[in-house]
Image 1 (cartoon, rainbow, N blue to C red):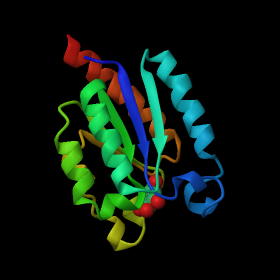
Image 2: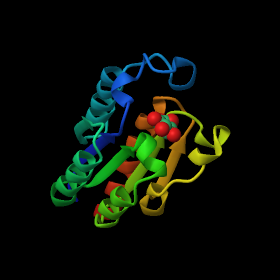
Image 3: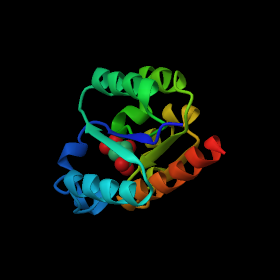
Image 4: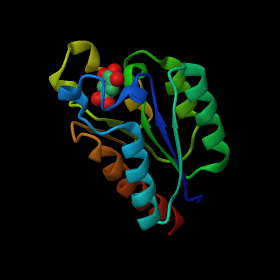
Length: 149
Ligand code: DHK
């Protein structure tokens, strides 16, 4: 199985570090990307890291990943709670998908308690801050190696 992993980030995550730091912390998306690249190297994963505020762009990256990747880590941000279209794109993938939320969505407003994306995810990480991305990569590396064995 391919060791390419797409790490996809949804709307407003470009403002990470500046937006509601009490909820999302002070680390920027560039910090998260650096962490993912470092951990990716340790785990022998090739990281494709992207962020967009546009739903169609995230869907296009999922379609691209479908052709060449071994897994996806996705923080769909607000699209988590609204996007049947992103769920449809993820359902078209045959590799493992890990859903990440920086905040503990279950401790927040009730509209954040439902995720369309979870229907396609092998696992969900929420409330571990930006460290959640690193945990997700560790889990994906395990799932990719198991699929190979
Ligand atoms: C990020 C967002 O922007 C919210 O819309 C989600 C998620 C939670 C996060 O915790 O990373 O509800």
